[in-house]
Length: 154
Image 1: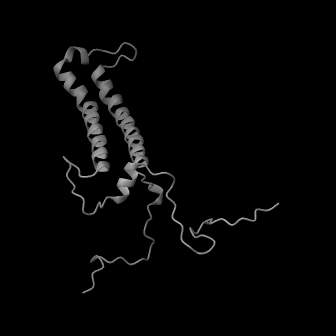
Image 2: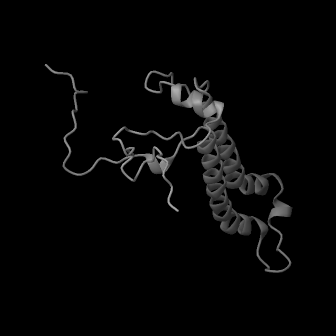
């Protein structure tokens, strides 16, 4: 038995059977995503100390937190070696390597790697919260002309 009812379905072209264009909302958008959609980012104030949009504020919070963690990872062992040279220059029991060398040589790169994973996860969560789909960003194809003057006719 076949289904005799008609449905407005969109194929791969994004058009319904009767030719109308169908826009999907990707499901239920959160209030933050709806606010993000209505924000005019081209005219929004860009201030690193006091961002004007909720997305910018939350993103900046992630960036500053990551920067603080990075500063501790990079400058922590050096500072601790200056403040407590006896503890930091002792040999580690298992590998027989000075602690400050180990923290600089192994802790720094490992911390940077973990920090990059942390940032990627936080940014993905933030993008999801505000309904940003990085896959939907279109790139310009080769050969298309671009108006460098903003499209203003002279």
